[in-house]
Length: 245
Image (cartoon, one colour):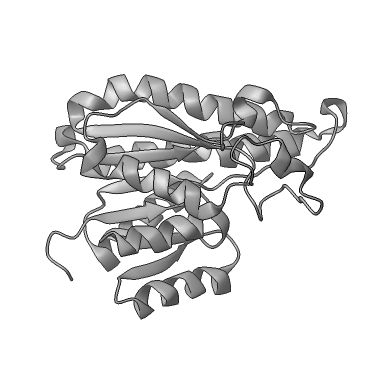
């Protein structure tokens, strides 16, 4: 085990923004716990990429909407990699694109459980590990939000509500956790290539002042800045990664 190496848990890290963040975190010196829900193969591919570059990583299955799974995730990460110093709440459930009157109660509950309750459960567990009040050495947390929290998301009302909630808890917890040595911020991506935004004719890119869709790597760079010492005086912030849109 590398002495004093920072350890980051990234939820929903088997693909997309989570996977890009895991790879970049490893390049920046973190040992990385790659959390996944179902796609073990993809998560292990991320781990193999990290290990091929001489980094340390492990894949850990857990449903972040379940408190017992979250506790197990952190316990496994500590056992494999060492004390947790950073958390990226990336896992989310967008749900089905339906009018609000056609969304089932079960789907509403699932979206909110994964996309809002899940991050809060992970934050609570991170505090137990990192807070100076609990004997930890402090740390940093980044929540992945969405510009849909501000602009709305067509036929994605529960998801939009969850993301707006994630920004609200980021703001509130910055005040609560600062005295315990924990910084908490959020990154709010706009239109990201390879996500839910097909752009076959380039029409979406033309809406963006910088002239292109964002990438998962663009978001990962913002996340890693917030986790770094360069952002030591930043907490409670929501950074828009939108290309100006």
